[in-house]
Image (tube, rainbow, N blue to C red; front, side, top):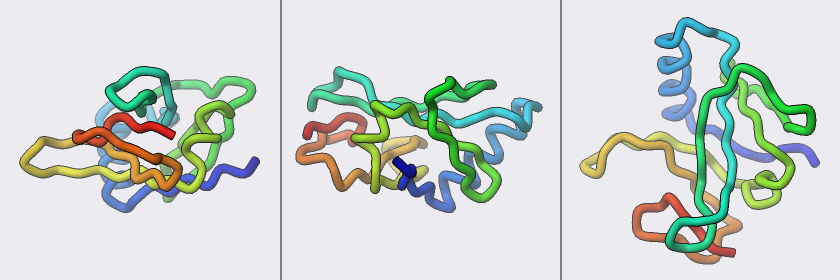
Length: 110
């Protein structure tokens, strides 16, 4: 399956700044799904130095993103964005696959 995950310009800019601050231009940005959260599943984000063997990797404006196959089935067609507002600074996922979401946007249900 070809990953169809979009990364907003705000998210790309924030990620590029974070990667530059870590002095490791080879960092990968992992987007994943795990069980939990108030709606059943929750989004996770982390930096990694290496992709796993079955990861799908793609480049978005110079930021390398990895997603595992299990997470991709829930994230396909989604957009990762970075928001800085009154609730704070955070990455959020605008996910058309989610039937329900929690109030903070960090978890969802199918």
